Each structure stands twice: as C-alpha cells, then as structure tokens.
Amino acid sequence: MTTTTAIEVRGLRKDFPVREKGILGPRTLKRAVDGLDLDIPRGRVTGLLGLNGAGKTTTIKILATLLRPSAGTVRVDGLDAVADARAVRRRINLIAGGERMVYTRMTGRENLWYFGQLYDVPKADLRRRTGELLDLVGLSDAADTMVERYSRGMTQRLAIARGLINRPDYLLLDEPTLGLDAPIARDLRRVVADLAAHDGTGVLLTSHYLAEVEELCGHVYVISAGRHLAQGSPAELKAATGSHRTVRLTVTDPTERTRAVADAFGATRETLPDGGEVITLRHPGDMAGPLTAAVFEAGGSIGGLEIAEASLEDAILTLAERGEAGLAGPGAGRPDATTLRAGAATARPGAASGLPGAATARPGAATVRPDAAAVSPDAGAALSEAATAGTKGGTP
Ligand SMILES: Nc1ncnc2c1ncn2[C@@H]1O[C@H](COP(=O)(O)OP(=O)(O)OP(=O)(O)O)[C@@H](O)[C@H]1O
Ligand SMILES: [Mg+2]
Image 1: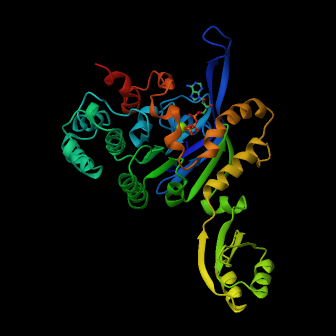
Image 2 (image 1 turned 30 degrees about the vertical axis):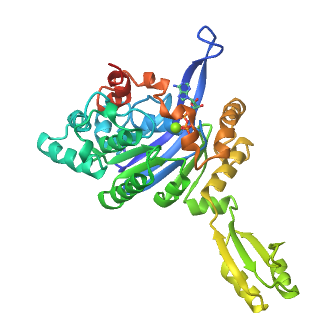
C-alpha cells in the first residue's frame, strides 16, 4: 500500500449491463469508463473534461464509492475505495449539480444536521459548522424552511453546504454550478479555490462551463468514450490543439502600406462601409502589440483593437473530434473503439453546439438518473444516503 496523499486511479473500467431492444432484449455491457488513469493531488483543483456521455459522472461516482468499478483500482491516500470504502468515505464528499443530494421533506438546517451526523461530525462542532455553512451559501434566512419549498438554486446551494459538512480532504464536484445564478456560482468558485489553496483540499471538477475550469484548474484530463485523450494545463491543451487567439484591428485610413503590413502578418482584411478596414489575425501567440505597432509605423490610424483569447472550448472540441476519429495519442483508439465511438457520436451534436451553455440544454441532467439504483448495496454511509435522498424524501 502506498502512503501518497492523493487519489490515484489506475486502469479504471466500468461496464453497465444494458438490455437492447427493451426489457426482454439480450443483455450486453455498455463500457462507460475504459482504462482511465488519474492523479488527483491534495491542494489543487484538477479538471475532468469531455463531451456528454464521456464518462465523467461515472468516474466521479466510483471515486465517491457510489459505484463499484468493473476493473482497475482507486486509492485514496493509499486506501482502496472498494475494500476500505468506509474509511474512504470519511475523507471525501461530492457535490453534483442537477441531482438530488438532499432530503426535500426536511429543512435546510435539518439536512445539514442529519448529514453531519452520518459523517460523525462531533455534535458541538456540528452546530457551529451548520450555521457557518448556511451563511456561506446564503441560506441563513431559509434555514428552517422545508427544502421542498426551495427554488432549484437554493436546493443546489444546500447541496454545496452538504458537500462541505465533513471538511472533506477530497471534494468531488460534478457540474457543481449547474443551475446556480452568477453570484453564487462565483462564490462557490472562490470557496473551492480557497479550500484547495489554504486547506489543502484535493478537488476534482467536471464542468461544461469552461471558463470555470480555466479559472480553477491547473491540470485537466480530457476523456472521450471513457478513455484518456489528453492532459495538461488549459494553456498546454490550447497550445497542443493549435487554438488561436484572435486580434481584430480597425484601421480608419487604410493605405497600400498598411495593407502590405497586414498581408506580411498573414492577416485577413475586410473593408468597412465607412472606408476603414478590419485586419484579423489568428495566432497562438500574442500578436496584438507587434501588429498594432507595425500598422502604426506604416502610417495607419488605429480605430479599434479587440483581442479574443483562445478558448478551451475550441481545444476540447478539437481533441474530442480527434479522439472520435481515432487520431488521439497513446491510450485512445484501441480496437474496440468503434462501438463506443458510435455511442459518443450520438451524444455529440447537442454538446458541440453549446458547450458553454450545455448545462441549460441537457435534458437528462435535472432529474435523478436511473443509475442511482446501481449504488453499491453496501454503501451504507452518508454518500449513498445522499444519492438516494431524492427517492426517499421526494414524495409524501
Ligand atoms: N446506469 C447506467 N446504465 C447504462 N449506461 C449508463 C449508466 N450510467 C451511465 N451510462 C452510460 O455511460 C456513459 C457515460 O455516462 P456519464 O454519465 O458518466 O457521462 P458524462 O461524461 O458525465 O456526461 P454528461 O456530460 O452528459 O454529464 C454514457 O454513454 C451513459 O449513457
Ligand atoms: Mg455527467
């Protein structure tokens, strides 16, 4: 057993039994996670990215001990997530957007009290912790209201507080800001960054809001059809996929000389109705200064300058497309890729059109998934309680 303080995932695989053609059809296996290796160290926010159906939630549920892996190992500070599940559960917690993580027929305060007890938070500490967390997520005024009367955003805020009740060493965040309004989403990002930087919490984040990922994550894994596609910092991923920054320079009095400069930089030119010209340059490097200086030197007057950063969204889409085409690096495109790729392809169109906004457009996201039933039967503690909370507390 190692004594590393990190979550170490090796060769992780998850097959779900599925029936084709209805309940009487033949049983086959759907491979959702296919040989993943991940390292999630303390004190940092690590990203897990991929298009819809890539296997992010399945992976996170396995790390949270809510699902058993079909193969491979997950070690949390050296403890095995299957054999030592109880001990692992004390060190981790999960915040998932769009899934019911709390009981609707209890108040916010009662929920936190209940989950705190499941996590063995000492009673004296729990009272203070509950108050602090309700305050942190802006629910102090609604603390004694039944959760069934909360709005979706309020319920998600409570899920965030629930996820922090045991001061977890590792925090698993599966689209945690889904459905949150901008101020609370920003507060959550601040809390998460702070937990990693000051408390040494190891965080794993999945999100379709790539700006959020860029803000928080130093290291990102990109997966497709359950397989590793790429990893690196957001900047490295953008560089590796040749994602370009766009510079748009408006020249109010274009001349032959300014046009020659634009052409020399390999930029495109577009004439405006007022006789001005927009010079557009896409480049991986920072070309705004040199281009502006050269146009100015050539006697041009600058009417405007816009710089659009290379987007992580472009990089992820490029990687996913390469992955589907079987062109990704080592670890991708193994022989059984065809069937899985077919699944990935059906999941793509919605995602490709709206990665940043995908969260609002994902029909399955807002409801408790049927796979809640796949929670391992021995998962008796807080996390599995949470996963089934919706079922137990949702109906009178
Ligand atoms: N209980 C289940 N039974 C059968 N297949 C499942 C089950 N849960 C997930 N899957 C399948 O496994 C694959 C991975 O799903 P998963 O929810 O992990 O994707 P994801 O990356 O979280 O996607 P999203 O971005 O949409 O949240 C999908 O093809 C999904 O249909
Ligand atoms: Mg998911």
